[in-house]
Length: 168
Image 1 (spheres, helix red, strand yellow):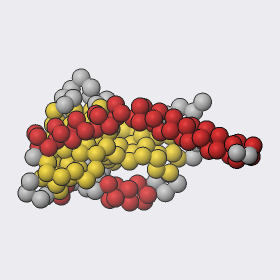
Image 2 (spheres, one colour):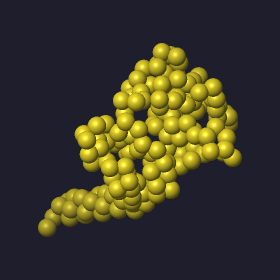
Image 3 (tube, rainbow, N blue to C red):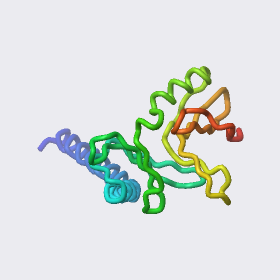
Image 4 (cartoon, helix red, strand yellow):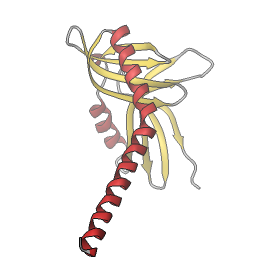
């Protein structure tokens, strides 16, 4: 073989090894997340009668929960909140507002804001109390500040609390 061909083959081999290493690292770092998601879906299927899953998202605030959206055995759209391996709450999707409706509301109320993340979740009014609100958790940037705001799942109304993250 010519010297040039050897270098090309060696370069290709090195690139393939590096790409394989990156892929294995990604799988390694995401495996716990995927296992947690799969466990929440299984709980939702067993305890809430979820027949099919359309979307699952993790929400972290005072309560860490998985929100599973899908269809129940009656083919109705349903939303299930799973906390600590148990169904905390389930609601027919028609009894609440959709993510798109909340997104439209946010764009109307906060036209200068950039939505970073909008997911369903749980907001504890008082961590010592059992009062919970099932909400959409909005993380957004407005001017130079990042903020959190919550919108009720039931009617899409914004809760009073807005949390601003400090600038560095």
